[in-house]
Image 1 (cartoon, rainbow, N blue to C red):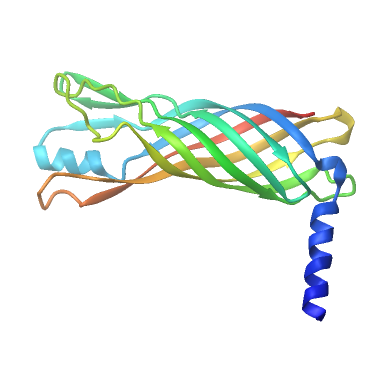
Image 2 (cartoon, helix red, strand yellow):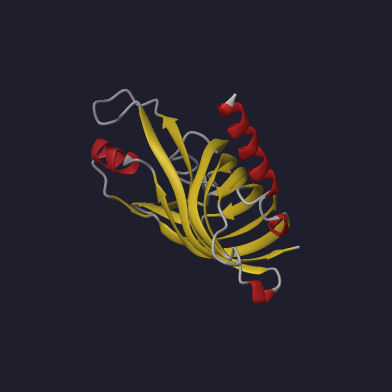
Length: 208
């Protein structure tokens, strides 16, 4: 009985905490990005004996919006571009230009005298587009798939100063994580590679 009472009290606290934190919000952010193909290009270079170089750092932006239900839980949608990342093989320059449309739970906690500070985590799924150029070796592809579902996750910190009446700021590290399989039957290649596209961004948002 005591456990049931404590559980009910916890639910009441969660649903009633800081009603002023409830509401919709929208924001925009910019940051540095990186792409990781799990060393697939390095394995391809060893397999072919060719000197394949890559530049997997770039910059991107994000648009996001959501609804905060209470002091802990928000549901958030974001659109992210991870920038263009190049792969150079002899006379060919191919690239990936990843983009993701994500739906995530934003789980955090507002603290401080005016509840202006909020660390949070992002957990969800994305519709991910690798945006590869399709021009490797006159029309071929470096990567087998273009679009697929990915796991989206991140960590961040918000500052929502009470004096700015709804304007807030974020620093976030987040990304899309997925596994791709390879058809190469060779000791030079793994059967699958863990890939990711990530961004460290600074954002500004408005809570309505």
